Image (tube, rainbow, N blue to C red; front, side, top):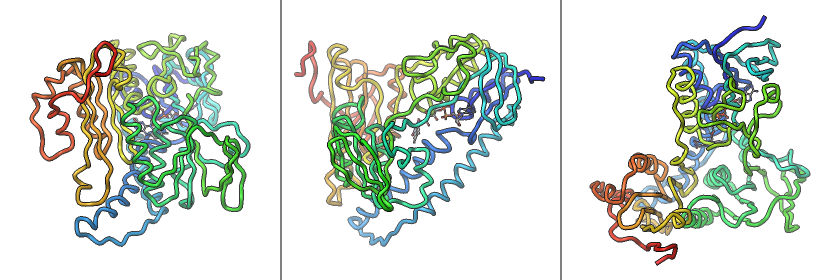
Length: 457
Ligand code: FAD
């Protein structure tokens, strides 16, 4: 006998949890199925533990400049202490997420789910069948592991948080946010760190000035950048792993990590039994209301390949529940998504890059570069960058890009006026907070340069 639900959610991560809670609060009989740990990637092996490790790694720089403020610090770092403290915190959050699901009446099932048809779900471990009026697939994604000899010797973001010991050196393959964030985490914790990337500058898709500024910041922290190169093979060599690169060079590393992208979790999910169509990139194809090609099956979050960020998955899960269970069809606007890279230096961005904006008509570009005040008593030379891109002559703000301390926090606040369609004149009306770095955003006088008729002037 199969049990009947209004909604069965597959995946207890950011999107699935929010959708399940909201649907249950609207009176839907809801079950959520999670095969690993409730909270999903973000809570268990993504944003949350990552940010905790970022905090851990940043003490190093503070100790470094402390002497310029008169402090003498004798510091040492213990990796197992950090891993244990992280585990305690994510277990607390996992418990809180479970309680928050159970309070409005969601049934939490720890199992692996497989779709068996437009309204059917099979629980693999319990060997049970569920019937659902609606199925929400929120299975997230997983790290891509390149198909090279010795790939099994490397770790991914799934394993990195629980390494038994801190390696003496690490080679990180990739040039995206996970690669640069973990590079600065490891470098900050005293590990000799290298990035190998097939492109010619990290953080493809971000504004070029900030990419170059970030690159300089990584190098200033001793991170070696090996560009236009890939790993061809890995071999165990004593306690080390020998990596052979595409240029033929071989070198040993204490650990090797792949951060070369993530792919949607659709394998073995039974989606073909319900004729759920996939995109060319292997994600679940959905419409603006997150509905798949099968009318009873919806999908949210990373498995849909739209924007792989926790707040986006949460918003999609929320709007799905509004649409289906509160008779309030509402679509997520993916056009203006603020984002942060918690590297050192930190990066925050929203809207168009200069290269993108320049193709959209006449624009003005405002750039401030300066040493963060925190470093002014030390010998550190790193520059902070704040960049504002607007329509010509005080028009709408099209993009904002920040590199330096607090960039993530600042970009969240800039997202508010930008979501309201603010102009440069609106920014200018705000009175500055002094002394801050963010005050530059409201005190720009003339543009640094402009684009007119497609040409930089
Ligand atoms: P997930 O959170 O991945 O949840 C999917 C869940 O489904 C998982 O728990 C999985 O176990 C479960 N599952 C899969 N298949 C099945 C099945 N068949 N049966 C049962 N359960 C199943 N985003 C940010 O916004 N900010 C950040 O700073 C940030 N940092 C990140 C750092 C790292 C290292 C990583 C990997 C990601 C980071 N992200 C960050 C991205 C963020 O974690 C994801 O965008 C977000 O978790 C997506 O939520 P989701 O609900 O789509 O999927």
